[in-house]
Amino acid sequence: MNYTHFTMLRHGLPEQADCLLGRTNPELTAMGLAQMRSSTAALEFDLIISSPLKRCRTFAQQLADERRCRLLLDDTWLELDFGLWDGKPIAKLWQQHSSAPKQPSYSQFWHAPFLHTPPNGESSESLLKRIVTGIADLSRAYQGQHLLIISHSGVMRMLLSWLLNSQQIGNAHLSRVQLNHAATLHFNTYLDEADCLWPQLQGFNNPCSNPLSAG
Image 1: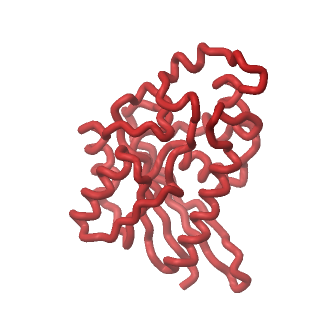
Image 2: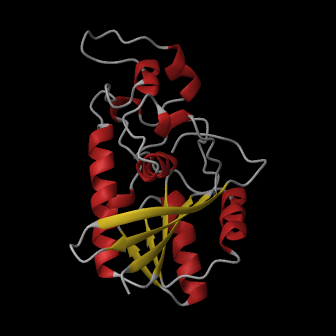
């Protein structure tokens, strides 16, 4: 069977939710844990793959233990590295203007993420490449299986943009879709006879009444 089924889950509400959380590593809150438990209650899957950051890994380990399911921690599913902005309050980042000629402001990055990279951080091109490579590798390794990937908002936005073939157009992967905590994204991939990967979006579930934040 050449199909692989994917569900991607954004982590629940973490501590420091008002900050830009890339590689910054706060704990998951009790509310965040409950959000993720609600989003996965009816899901069935063969394997859990998680970002190693605590806001993803904590629930991933609990779920793996409860379902007696294999868990893989994989850096592929880390959030974008925001460099010098990482861990800073988002409201303050919006107010700041870059003092260095070659460094963008947060506003410039937000409006054109493929043209601007966070200072000392990771580019959107790099994020896109590691996500697409990761999906291709998993599709070849786990054909016919249903994989649950627990990750971050930037990863999910980039993935959704890729599925819709809209990356690098404006700021689609950052702001055109509201992505709440514990949102889920469902898609399949198909490998044809020439080993070419064909992804297909299956569904998107965005839980209501939880705060929007980056990371």
